[in-house]
Amino acid sequence: MAIIEVVPSSLEAGLEAAMPTGVDYASIRYSETRTEEIAVRNGVVEPVRTATDGGVMISVWAGGGFGYAATSDLSARGLAEAAARARHWAEATAGRGLVEFPPLQHQVGTYVSPVTSPWDVTSLADRVAILIGADAAMDIDDRIVDRVAGLSRADTDSLILTSGGGRIEQSIRNTYPSLRATANDGANTQMRTLGRGAYVGQGGQEVLTRFGFGDESAAQVATEAIELLEAPNAPTGTMDLVLAPDQMILQIHESIGHPLELDRILGDERNYAGTSFVNLDMFGSYQYGSELLNVTFDPTVEGQLASYGFDDEGTAAEKRYLIRDGILERPLGGTVSQHRAGIEGVANSRACSWNRPPIDRMANLNIEAGDQSEAELIAGVENGVYMATNNSWSIDDSRNKFQFGCEYARVITDGELGPVVRNPGYRGISATFWRSLNGVGGSETSLAMGTPNCGKGEPNQVIGTGHASPTCRFSQIEVFGGDS
Image (cartoon, rainbow, N blue to C red; front, side):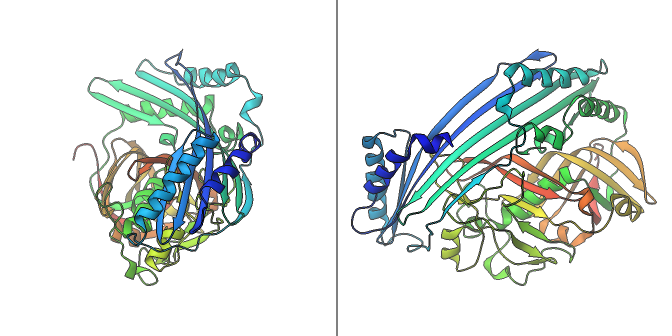
């Protein structure tokens, strides 16, 4: 990694500056992110945006206190000043913190995103040409009034050094393709996308192939936008609901992921993004969902958006069950939160950038596949709706009551998919919604996707999370359409 070749000597000096007598643990985390954003809108190439952002976070534990400080000045003086600020805050908080020195580790290891077809071997003109073709493929009807094909990528290299000899190097390559077609006829406007930004993952050009990004999928997006324009509104009532993977990921994200974040359960998000209906007494016994619900935290999935070898506290990533056979087993809490709560968690302490401290975040949060085909799931519905692709969401501060809208839907009658309907939505309560799960698709229905822009924390941190899910079926859900 180029980053590791450029800065190791200065980082070693910064770590030494953070380690005078009396310091229990110190770490220095360097990260550099390089981004590129390209888009073609209605046949016009938008200005290409590129950025590079890098710097260091120094963390110190001393005498029961904790302090950290960030800097983009990698000179000896800059690092020494940051180390002094971190030590100052550690001394100032000694005896006043929520936790004594936690069992932080000194790991040695590397992680590199799997990339079979790097973007760097292509020219900017080649990347733009892909989008020009996709944009043109959406120009199928005069009623398509807006169309956008986009491609973003982010390359992040990081190095963590710890006072006990830890050294972790990670190189992550993320690719984010997108398609959007908007159709209009008078007062009726409908939008269709390629997964609403969820078809993202680690890798290079192969990510486009993984999700079928190209002229054919672009034409399909536009065709479905016109279908929606001509369709009636979705029905309203209590009925069965079949959710496609690209809608399931937000359902997982909002009503499993956020409620299980341990710092939220401990009250850390109370004045910003709310708390959780989950409490510590629930782990090990609470019936979170039906026996078909199995949810894992797994940053080891190859190619998924939030895969890594180690979290930003230096804990090795491993697959762990959060919910098994419907029973809640463990929270999404890193080493510090686990020490506070006295409960086992996972390696999910993550920071969005060099100038943010790591906090408890979702990484790859996945529903394990079942054994039913999508045809079998639909065949089990007498009266219901199939919905795909989220376009709106609302959930209360305890992550319990929710309402979601989707882009695309089809009615299901007597086990058969019927006509397309528009403006579909559904609502429920997390504490009971997952118990209504009565069908889980097999691995052939599952897709590993992600949400690239999850926000949390003060100051705010926007980070990517991965989610994989098969198609799932729920019984007797409150469904509504645009006429409601």
